[in-house]
Length: 193
Length: 263
Image (tube, rainbow over all chains, first blue to last red; front, side):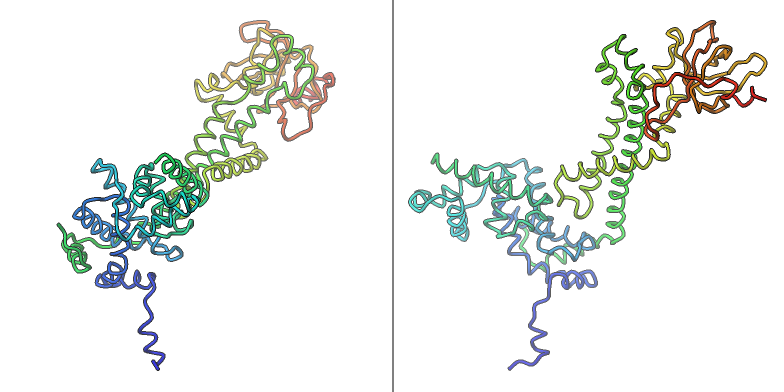
């Protein structure tokens, strides 16, 4: 049976602890990078960065910006919302700079999430069968960027309304309205398919 | 292409020689936005206080006899619409928008809906302006501007303009001194023109003191370039402090109203 001190060692550090360590010692920042590398890369790809090389460059810039702004992090907020906010702003400014329209990638891992999204749209079982994941993917793709962003955060990243509000810096009510409108628009796009 | 790894990030941080921006920088930035919001609400309140003073100062709101007189000359609705201080309301709107911008850029400002922030800022400005007008802030601002800033009177239709029509028999201004020998008042109107007002046959509204520094409204007849024969004089009352002035005929004697003449 593990002793109390062993349990303490095994307990993963909270994000807040990692931030405090990173501020004391640069090496401590590596733990933050390790923890958020995969989710942020997925987020970059889901938001529509098609080029893997650009995605990695973007990820690097996100982490460097996070490091530079570490003192701005308020411990009363979830760290994940804060780092996603930085990521979101970097990705959007990347699309603006590159003047490209983001296109959602068809990712194997997202197929299940696409199914979840379709069932959440309130389409009944028989109709549900009609829509292939790639059709739903195209419907997400066809949405305006502000709708696509909330759909990705809600259904693909699994963020709560409060987290989305913190990431996109808008009131929760606006987030709810955008999600509802996005779902309606998706339904109407899928109905036409 | 960058091969991604945590070490690579640390190397890149090292290579670019970047360090975390100090905490005070962010605290200062937030303080600037809070200050902007607070200053905007206060300046918005000053605008609202002045707007309230300018609008409520108009005589059509109090004196039925005057309403009847103005009705005969122009429709009252036009008079009211002209009397709305659009300049100050525009200033209030602008300051409210700046306050919204300030609040929006504070740490948690984005969590509040736009309408709630703008409505809250307007309500706060309204409440503060009411408090400010307990100390005549609106009056002080308006009087300073109308007497000292050229062109201000073209932007706001104020009661001073209504009462500076000597040809029509209306004059107003600040009492500069009492001319005992000529039994007259020396009055400066808001355009800084000096008038000699003859008190030979004048009725004064009760409680009106004709002493230097007091603002008065005079009805009568223009008798010369800067000379006026007064038939009635009333004090320039603050309407939002006091009950409406009853429409009683002026009965006080000039000797009671002018301490210098009663000696």
